[in-house]
Image (tube, rainbow over all chains, first blue to last red; front, top):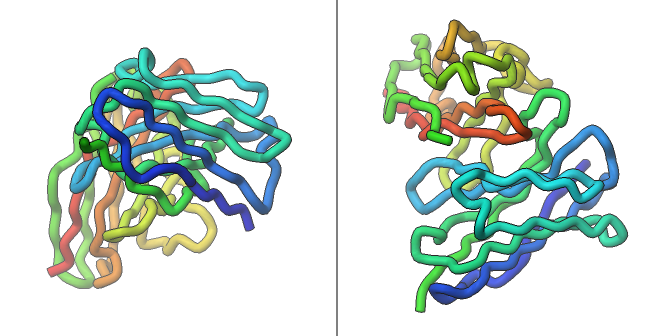
Length: 120
Length: 110
């Protein structure tokens, strides 16, 4: 059974950088059938796709976040990562990592989510 | 890239049917048959209910069905049950390997 687990600090200061890692177990990240994605959900609000990365390292980002987002993948450790710079309170959210089916662009596996609060 | 439009809330009594709409544009919902629906209970990660507009993953009851007409996709839940009370989100492929979600709909089972 595939499992995804987010890890990283639960608190970030305004203007600083948020960094999260998603470790994939029960399957390889190096497969051509899937993208690996980050999706966030501010408290009490809806879901927002942040971006996706292919095992080759190709990245695709939400247009409004593109200038602040960097995603990377480490196939040797079977994990992928998110860096979001210059964070503000608006970036406070539960951050989910997820697997997206490449053929039909739907999320079939989600991590449990991790809350990141931006506060001084 | 604007969010897809969903009603904030819908409700129905046990046994009834409800339909949740998801309106996009001809750059996302209208242009691709890659609409998916997710159910989210409080404090939990979303769960896939429908993919490819109409496909139900294994384990999802056949009470859940999806459809699409033009720029609007719909999720219909028939024979409402108490456990169906949750938030529902639509999602569409939006080209150039990007995804866009709807704002979410809170389903209340009366």
